[in-house]
Amino acid sequence: MELLAAIVAYGGIDVPVARLIDVFWPEADGDQAQENFKKSIARLRKLLVVDGAILWQDGKLSLNREQCWVDAYTFEANSKEADLREVTGMTARDGNEEKEVDALYRGPFLGRSEIPLWAVSYQERLRTQFTKLFMRREKAMAGSQREQLMVELARAIDVDPVAEPLYQQLIPLLVAANRHAEAAAYYDRCRTELARWAGRSPSAGLQELTQTIRLR
Image (cartoon, rainbow, N blue to C red):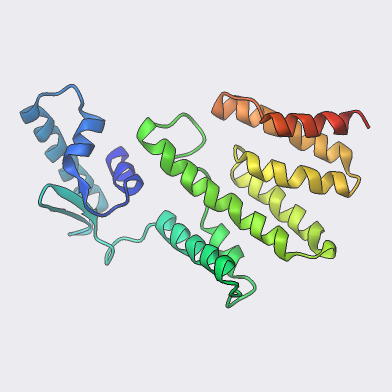
């Protein structure tokens, strides 16, 4: 399963076998590493059941897109379409289109716990796309719609409580609505979640903002 996750994280198309071997069997000699890889691929193919789901050709692995659907890839593709619409000024075909996009994001790639180094950049890339959806939504919403945006941001934080940009967006909205106690509570949650899952504190900017809240 880790091998499958690595193939996904590296793009799913023409992933060099040598790169995967270096990740999973860095200390094995050439022949042993190749043997380990062959056994792992055989187990993975058996686990996936569908023949031809994993393609191995010219020293590279690919997911057969005709047989495999990956939610992360669909999420990325749809997010990029939303980015393009913002740049070109085009409107969405459906008012619920972006909500359908963020519904594909079910949480951090490989979960909240500590993940392998090879997965970190892909996890952050997906998280960044997720948070950008809500930034775009805030720009498009009038003042009377901010209440709905706050509800959506709260739900998004439940999905990925380590996504600090969501707190950075929600807390000022709560302050503007004179809901200071809720704003402070979300800062406390941000601090707790970041310490638990990421081993760090909130950014200096968020700390300063929350300090002004507590002084009121």
